[in-house]
Length: 436
Image (cartoon, rainbow, N blue to C red):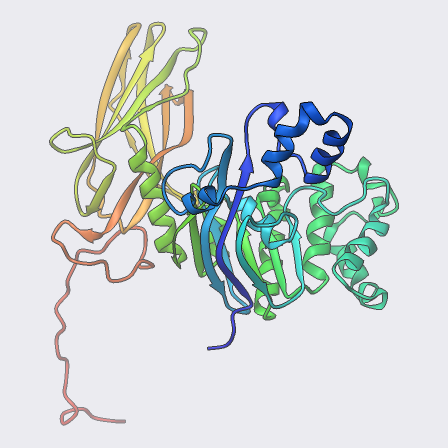
């Protein structure tokens, strides 16, 4: 096997936390202050010039080294082969952005080793690497120069960058006057077209509109197919699925697992679901509306809270809601949605005239769904007019094992599992076959 283009070995990063007076200043700042006010800053200088070996020894365990410090990244190791597109997922605060900043050399790791075999371009925050006083045209050349490219190389790609970013009209305007969307368009165009061997992309693409995001996904696919390598951080599971064959799951600064993207996403979503309360408190609306959702919960058929089900297992969705004034023909509805935003089905209650009060209804889910994670939409309506609606609520997981303990044969076999097992019948044999 060839040498990985990215090698990350036991990378850790610690940050100082606390009050403003205890901010993570540089040694130079502490030294200058110590000279001008030695008595006041002697203790602070001592803290910044030492890093207890005990603290570094502790970081491999579960204890924080000090209440003034937090490990944003802790003992993360992985390799990425040339041409791979790897997703990095995890909850907020997992260390995803910090990891990319370390790989981009924006911040130094506290410990560990990184080997990058190629030129790196990164798109981490809107406007990163742009000088606000320079025009879009000037920033294209500035970024290219930072990447180590020659002017003739930038000249060769210049028209493609401008065309992709769709900001030709504002090319000679200082970028400080750009909207966040224009910033992203130009920043991504520069990062993707200046031919880095390694491209690091954070959640920044969420700023762009839907059409531009789709365009970026296509471009990242083109970049990957050309043999370049991408690390992609996103909370958009559909984008991760579409772009990345393999992914890494981070949590609490640690790399929990790396593997096929579908497996990693299911692990992430199921663990997130298990950590939540089985009762989901729905967003409330005021009494000026006709009604509001209250809670949503998921139960086994014997009414026990549960958020992980086997293929073919029946389960219950319990909805509680409130009606504020007399309303005729009320229908409660629950929609099932994939994490890609694909609607699966909607369950409706029987219509009923309701007086003010709290109500509940149960929906039996007996669909033979494949292994997947499901999110929910909740709606209340009267005579086809919806007066309450929320979507992308919580999630439950259908595991890859059926209720009969049979493994799932293919995760791409469709939204619904097929329980038919048709017999194979012989039509003819070779001896009796006739060829025309």
